[in-house]
Length: 78
Image (cartoon, rainbow, N blue to C red):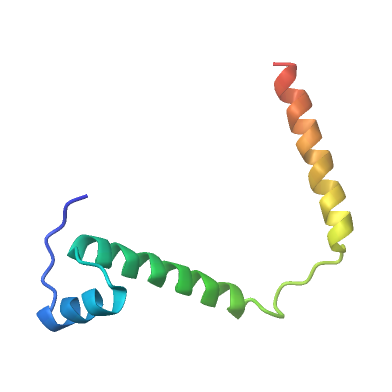
């Protein structure tokens, strides 16, 4: 997608220097991807202690595998 942005020259220069990229577009994409990853990680970390599972991972895995098999079977019968 094309976009017209008014960004401070010093910000772009610093980004190019820190990222090691030569192209502004590539450096900006890297910065945006990094920001999205960090925000996602922060949101997950904020859930720490707020989500409780009564099942252990082994039980959850069995349930997931059973569901996968059922979905595969239903697709074959269509």
